[in-house]
Image (cartoon, rainbow, N blue to C red):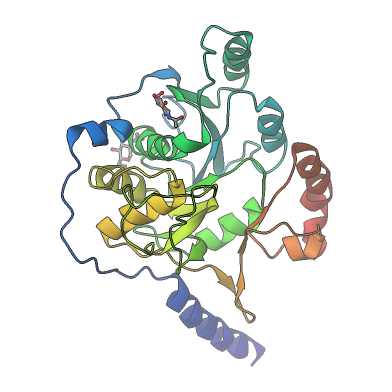
Length: 314
Ligand SMILES: *[C@@H]1O[C@H](CO)[C@@H](O)[C@H](O)[C@H]1NC(C)=O
Ligand SMILES: *[C@@H]1O[C@H](CO)[C@@H](O)[C@H](O)[C@H]1NC(C)=O
């Protein structure tokens, strides 16, 4: 009897979940046309050179989940915190850091330190574009191209910033029952609009983007996708003019592909599992979420010490 009730509950949940998890399609009005060569050049794989690469990272294994973490060259402390917490090597996951070059720094001590760190940990990929906030879109497309070229047999990937708390345990568990293709989820933004105020950090001129709204997209703090999308997004980037908002840019590529990002909600309260605000640490609240935003390296280490051992009691 109890078993049957449980079965019924499980099927009802499954139905509800699929309603939120199943990717749909989005309409777009006009057939996209390829970018002029000089515009596509910005994100073309032929434009940049690898200074550091981990070409063999997936040669002998197909990770279930690849964690792709954009970092600036100087963020050694943030990388170390990620390696010691949610990014620690595991059977299911592989963590890789993506960096550009610091201004005028190719021959500097900073670059030599990065090379040394890369030799030690074999987890840093560096391309020769200038590492800047404005260039995050380039970095994101390079991550997609790297994944498609070097780790196409991974099941899922996550683009996640280094100041995020990631509950990899809950994430991996949920992904086991998620779609294996055409799937992307995160903190879904459906009503985004360009900021036309030039003093805004997110300013976007009408010349660069003329529509007055964005297609649905997932916040760049952390989003998860089936690995097939890496190659598809790289191909779509031939049709999408580069804007300096990397998460909106991915949303524009998804529109070209007709892929709709999915919500990730917990039941029964429909709570967003990708928390883009900073929350005060609470072990059992965090145990039910996938990401929480806004952690300094030292805070990440402190929280993880409690979380990794204590979460089982929640
Ligand atoms: C982006 O990177 C390119 C290639 O290194 C560089 O020429 C350009 O100045 C960078 N743009 C910004 C805004 O940082
Ligand atoms: C991915 O899997 C396919 C089929 O199983 C195999 O032929 C291919 O060599 C694998 N590629 C990599 C990069 O592991």
